[in-house]
Length: 410
Figure 1 (cartoon, rainbow, N blue to C red):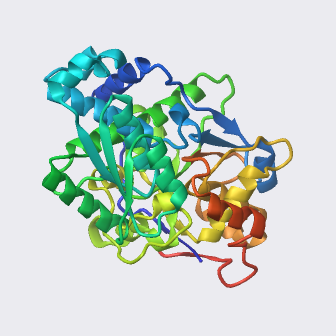
Figure 2 (cartoon, rainbow, N blue to C red):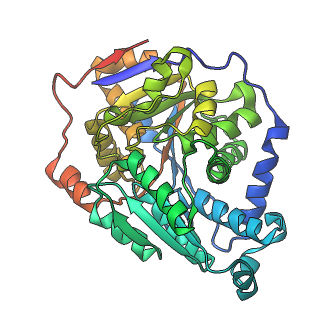
């Protein structure tokens, strides 16, 4: 069943604060010096929009970011570059790609080893970033990780190991290994006093939000999104994107809907806690949306999410599977989007509005014929085994009863 709740802890007033956007200029300057950087496309699914009765649907497509299959490299590359600059005692803005890759820099900082825990995409991004600057990466994946994800990390230049723990416990393990081996932990979630590097990662992710705003501001038509459906694992992507949107747009930000897997809905559960306290959930966190299989919210991300989100929603795997099938076999003349499971729940959710049974949910989310809805495809296909199961065998399929329902919790 689809579960949803209003965010009773949303900030009463969201203010434009240009002073808080100074960091984005540093991120922009950094990526302007990266040879193969370019903004990712925003794809219109106009025929699907007609089918569900909205003005338009856009997908921000991260499936080929910097030649990889996911947005995650935006955070890893920026964080690793900042770490190297800090080792050098220099301002990153004064360094370019060639200097960071130079023999002179390696002689000064030594051969560094970066380590992380990952469901796949962050580890691949870190392996790419470490290799890009001539260093090493060790990546730990949680139990049950698909071999495709292990190979992807290795092909990006990292060493990959699968643990016997879930994602959150693998994060703890990676942190312990960093201390034991003298490695540098590059994790996309904060804990205790570990905040600087996750902050850099979130700043890297905020480039997505800047590209979104710049794209729509450059269009002649008045189709700036009224709604943004953004997925959350630990919340680093959502936090980075929403922090930027609030500081640049204030109260003019879209209606924000945060979507999660039902078995790993730490944001929705946090929103239901008294005071909106970030809450870890436990268990295997099993879902085909592997990149969202996280039980502990990133406290840095959760603050921005809590302040800006209108509605939280958790969805069963069949919703993401339905979204995947639609993006790979789209309506009418809509283009194909090479989406993965973690990039598909927003489209899967929107597709339910073809059914009268979900009219009430559509109204609950304040989506109507004037709505322009933006979703983010965060990855390409990274798990080919499950992809075949979903696309060829139809599993998990859209149910006809029971699970085919929704409930508002608050």
